[in-house]
Amino acid sequence: MKYADKSINRNHAANRTSTPTDFAESHPGSAVVLWKIAGTDATEQFYSFHRQEVLKKYARLVIGRVANGAAPKYPAPEPGSFSKVPYAETLSTLARPTPFYTASHLAFKRAMREFCDRELAPIAESAARMGRAPDPDILKKMGDVNIHACRLGPGPHLKGRTLLGGVKPEEFDYFHEAIAHEEVSRAAGIYCFAEALASGMIIGAPPILKFGPQWMQEKVVPRILSGERMACLAISEPGAGSDVAGISCEAVKSPCGKFFIVNGTKKWITNGTFSHYFTTAVKTGKGPAGISVLLIERGDGVETETIKTSGTGSAGTAYVTFQNVKVPVENLIGKEGQGFAVIMANFNHERWGMVIGACAAARYITEECFKWSTQRKVFGKPLIEQPVIRYKLGQMISELEAVQSWAEVITFQMNKYTYKEQNQHLAGPIALLKYRCTRMTHAVSDNAVQIFGGRAITATGMGRHIEQFQRTNKFGAILGGAEEVMLDLGVRQAMKVFPKDARL
Image 1 (cartoon, helix red, strand yellow):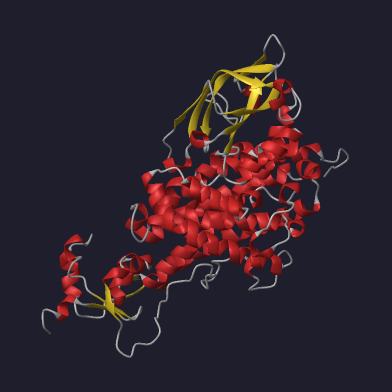
Image 2: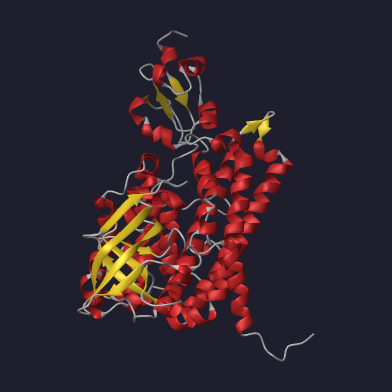
């Protein structure tokens, strides 16, 4: 074989020939690795060390196709396509019978998958790694196709809007909303770049929609749903997390009675760094009956500082300071002194959404592990031939599907209940579901790390999604209510309806 021929690598699985000559010295694994296999079919070696997207990234090195080559053995998935890997998709693809999903959900899922694959997935990794805030253009693109509106669930805010997949606003339900959360989480990584994509709005806007005065519905909501302005939820403080009643951020009426003067701090506020509106819990009196919720617009006296977390800086997690901020009394969300009820009602939807996103992320990680254990060879055979690996995959799948099924039952109930009934009947079950979900993601993460080994603790390469997940999955065990608080809340809610005449 001539030296010129050795400047060509063949990847028969992709039906491509490429030249590494100009790239060899820049190859992360050194030029030595390339020259050892130059002029040969490098398919097996390629998939041992590289993800499929590398072929697209370096498509400029392709110089031809294998003569008389058949169709690619391992074709790259097209944007919007569904995975054929077992357990990689929910029942929403209608591949199997389901009592919950319809053709409308499938059409919405296809459209959401294609948008996320084309617009979000290509920028997610670099944005998360660099800690960049999302480009305003991508938030506006999401607004243009009404993804922000869809992620707030069914309701009057959808009226007159054109939704993806041809779904009519009046047929949009909580399963459609769940699909929207799933697809964003899958494409951008929960607690990573997905956190930057208006996740603060998902928890900051519902109180405005449900309890805000008419002027907010007319002036604030449209700007949020279009992606022109961002909103966040500001409740947690340095001294008050799950103990909402313990907040100290204070709002005192001005002598004229037309304004609240707000002083205090908030911490761990998702998207706070780049938000324009802060749905803020404040003290206007004593105890739980002295809590109110204000819509505070960024302006004089409002300062935000980015907090470095285990996730990505692109989420804009912030430490917020309010110093003598003058807020019109018209900015009350709900009634003065009744903010605790507004906050508690909002928690149910927030926690449910966290479960949906976490399940989607865990499902993607499980798919990654299934693929890797099939293509990775150890001791002369695929990793999946080892019984212990099948045991771990079985654990991951069974834990995931159990939580997914429970989440779908609760989603079905949400469709049947009014907003008030949801808060009355589902607060306990959703709290318990969230606990079960974060225990599941812990198990999935732990098993995934063992399956991927060293690659699972490497921020780039084959195991980068596993590394990201194992570093951030504990967010769900803290945010929206700690696991221990969720268990306690679930039981306390059940105690409220425990029959007084029940005895052994």
